[in-house]
Image (tube, rainbow, N blue to C red; front, side, top):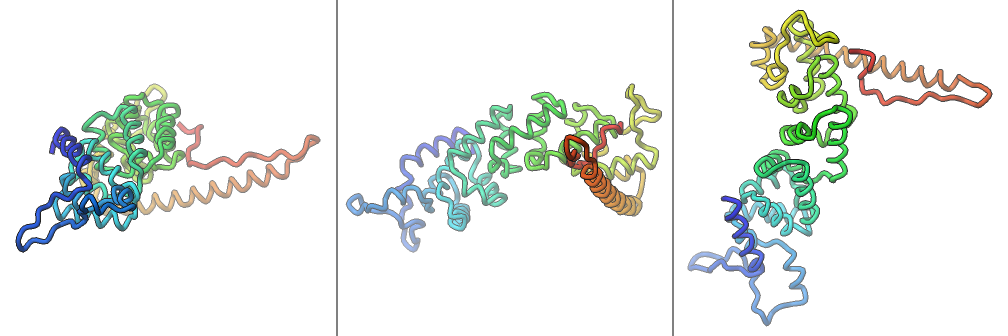
Length: 325
């Protein structure tokens, strides 16, 4: 169903949604029995308008099966603004099937206010997500509708100011990897630093390879496996290496099977054993960091002078050491 058809049907529904147009045929029970004669209007009519019924869902374009499932989900969520939420999603150009899948993936959307949802959608548009990309992003990752605008701005600012991505690159990252919006900011920054300093990869290649789709542990595991097999080398200050490193997209944007057979030239058993060793190494590194952090705190408490006690600030350990390049 195209955007124009959705909007046309939406306008018609907004005028008639409190009326049930479903005819009663012989041997067929009415799908919705909420019709009232004008003289039977009760004081609770206003509250009924704000509720979702099966008739209104049919008017929106949902099939009977879809309408029943949508109504059941809305009832369980006890959302007070479901009609306005569905209105906003339809006006966005999403068809009933896509909306139902969004609700199945993320039932929390039922509990939103239509105005809040529309505000967040408008903000994503301002960030450069155009029609088509915006709809695909919401369909793939509907949790983006739950995130406050402040959170989206925080992630965008980190990518621009600390990771030095351009505005256009940030838009591409959000479009291709919307999961970054929920990721821990320290870990997100470290993932960039690891790819930049340890792997010698620059921002355009990171965006092209969809770096932020992969977890930090998987990134380190795939890179270190190649490095220890002599198939990857950290570039020097001039960006030069003694060997030709595989493109980042060939390391990250492929299945594990393809990565092993075409890039690492290894067996699944070898990679499985290496993954266990990496996990053990990271666990030991974490213990060492905790131990050194505890020693720093003790030393800071023991240092006294005429002005009083000087205590060292506890650093938030992200695993990144700036002196390593």
